Image 1 (tube, rainbow, N blue to C red):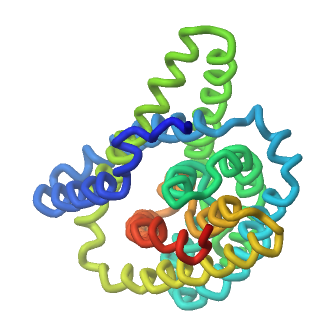
Image 2: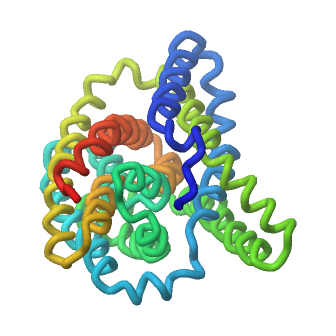
Length: 319
């Protein structure tokens, strides 16, 4: 029998919504705490991304490559079809560079972490998603820069100061990635390493809650007066979910996958990698100050969508 998921993993959606609400309340009722919260973002994010990457089985890339049908469906949806959908939907906010950049950053990157949990709750194939996650991680790191340049234009590239951006990438993506890889090696060889890996993996949900809370608390007061502009991105984020569900269903069927595999492809197409892109968006110049909140807003929209899809996808893709 499969090992049942811990309580805090089964209740991720309400826990994350609670963290968002707490962060918003703190940021609006106590604006003086915005600066301390902003200082806490980088260390909390670094720990969160370390825990995220620790769950990515890099040693299983070979197994993912050998599962040709599922790999083709997951890559076809996320690498070929998602950019087309994102380009079309992002035209709605194309006149606002900050909204456009936030939408592009978060929607062009497939999720590699809690998508596995939500797909499992809907009867999707968690093992296949787990195996393919390192391939999706590499693909998005390679494709995101050229896609951003293509969709947002060279002006974005010229406006980004490379120093802070490269520093954020090194400290909040490369360093946690290397630390996670070393921990996986240690866990395979020593008991201490295995215990560290288990403890960090178990902290994933609390770290995600802390990240959501401090990010929202640090920025909500500063953008409250521009909430009207931010809300323009919400229809785009909702439409992305609505469009990607049938695309994932068709792709899974076209690849000849079984029911759990098709459900997993649907979730892979819908869920996005806000955790990894958030530190990069936070390193953008001040002119893009709304972009990080677009990423957080996408997380909120996605979590609400997960409540629906966990129950809807088994009906759309019945056993």
